[in-house]
Length: 179
Image 1 (cartoon, rainbow, N blue to C red):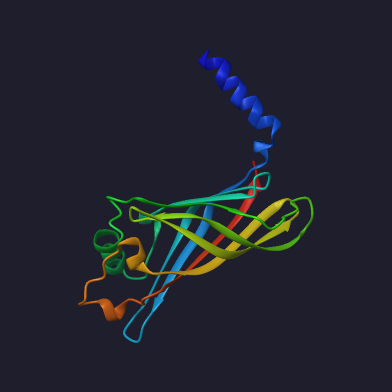
Image 2: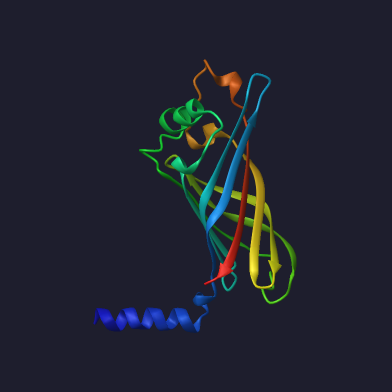
């Protein structure tokens, strides 16, 4: 019985176009915090991103330990004291966009992506502007937005509060190919 159910799920996925998903495992996530006392920036080049044009959905996942900092001490503090990477190893986003994107035509499509961002054990609804560029069957996505660490229960000790921006700039970039 289980084999029949699995076969029907796979067949249904094929018929409905689920095999038309676009994927990358090498997306980029960056964040930047600027204050008068210190600039903090980090980059993660191991971001998984999936776009499903049939359902206008986007999913993104990244390991928090994948963020690299210019200073090793910043990286240690980020993982141990702020995002607690051992306890909350991933950040994820699942959302949809309502604006049409024609994957058969080259062009730039500005969309608004709405969904659920999970970070540090907290899930929040967010809505961010993004662009999807179609170039010969490859979908490139980009979004920039701001996050407030306290919204995700990331505690900033008063001793270093003035060194970390109240709102952190976030940029996500990816280039997905049809799977």
